[in-house]
Amino acid sequence: MLTDDELDALLGPGSPTRVMLADASTVYAAFPAFIYPVLSPKGGKGVDDHDRIGKVSVRDEVRLEDVIGRARDTIDLVLGVVFADEERREVAAAIEELHRFIHGELADGSKYHAWENDLWNWTWAAIMIPLMDAHEKLRGWPSDQFREDAYAGLRAVGALFGAASLPDTYDGFIEYRDSSWLESVDPSAAAATSYLLGQRADPSRLRSPSKFPHTFTRIVSGPARHIARVGLLLVNTDTVGAAMGMSPTRADEVTLAAHRHIWRLIPRRASSGWVECYMRIRLRFGSPEPVWRTHYSPAALAQYRQRMRAARAADTSEPPRPSTKTRT
Image: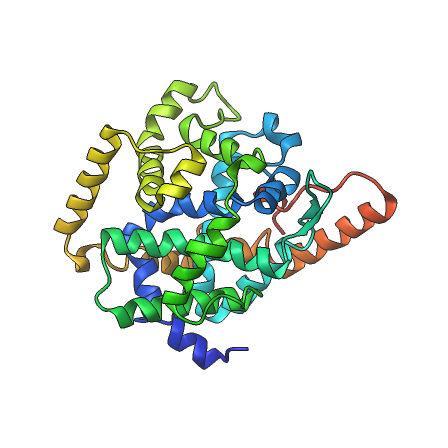
């Protein structure tokens, strides 16, 4: 297990991992990092069976506020392990605990559990891939050593919550991505991929539609949804894109070229530090409170674990997964 000093060296201020994630270009990786973990049969089935917005049985009840809250929670946890220096172990513990009850059975009768070593590492790799690819394609690596150190930091993040079996080097990671990881990509094995992609194309309606008509919501969310699509096209390989049914059109190729060109014109110093500044403000002023201090706090997750065990012992319906509605 890494010591606090080793984690500070890998993830602290000025570290390549922190510099990479703090750059404003990271927003392009946000949606791919949300989608990629469900591209495997087991990852997709976990969402179909358990996710608080993606669970098949609740999808008709999901509203835009729920989708935004779910996305924010994921972003908070991924960024929190890096930027919440004194709380990163607590954030990592929350990530691990949240997946305790994500298990079930595939159509062929085989079992799955989020903590399975291969699946757990595959899922963290699915988040790492777009984070590193988006940075490489928009900002570029100052040096091979910077890229290696950025990878080492992300690998250390995974080790904090148990995903500790990824290759030691970046070259090894690319080999793993192009072989073992890609072999498990099958977006058609579960409904999760098409459902989440559909949220980008046509987001759920607001819970109070009288305030903002759906047409207005679509217009206002247009820029964010555009970045989400560009982000996917940016990091997709031909194989992943084809599996997702997202082969770029000529218009897409022009758009991608334009985005790359714009980012080449933006000085690195002008885009650096934006995400870190955002997290620093959140951590200092708590507005809104980071999720690991509220509905994913140790006390809240312990309460959820107790309710889940009681429900299973009594063979009753499972309690809802923690969300902003159940803050403690």
